[in-house]
Image 1 (spheres, rainbow, N blue to C red):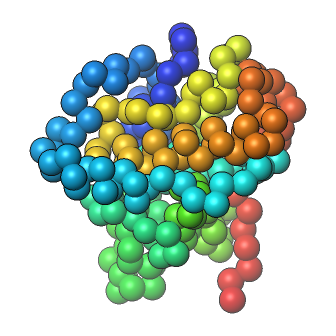
Image 2: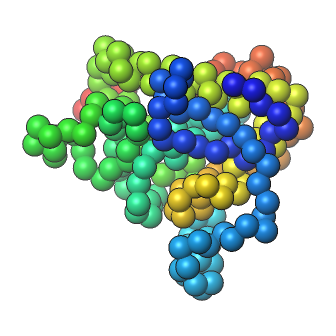
Length: 222
């Protein structure tokens, strides 16, 4: 994938030809576009915006920054039509060519799973997401291919002389309402973390050279 000047990434949940999953592309977006095409009115929009601003942001190591960025982009590439809240468990499924985020755990589907479950996700108060993988995901070829394609897109997004903070999704008009607000919350959060840690100003290419790529670790099931 060719990247020109890096702007906020556009997240696509559909498998793209030749990529097997999500491709992160970039396009310069204008803030003059209507930020509220759903017509929710100014007060609800402002309330939702305030509710998705990061809290208790802290300095992070380079590995933590990349892990939070990668994991949160992965979750926000999924389809969902609800407002996520911190402290609640959600589940990330691969259904054909799409990721979907659901409140229903694999054990609650009564044998009618929408697809393989990658793991349990939780929104943190700093507007990044954590992901606890399901056991046995390494044996699922479909999930392995999907994650591999997503990681390739993530590398393409960063592999330039533009700074990492220039790639953050401050405003992505093409995203649905809640995903757009959550993406902006992520951008705000990581921008603050980078500044607190003194890590801003480094190119994406430097990040790829100096920090290990994020990997999902399988955790023991209790």
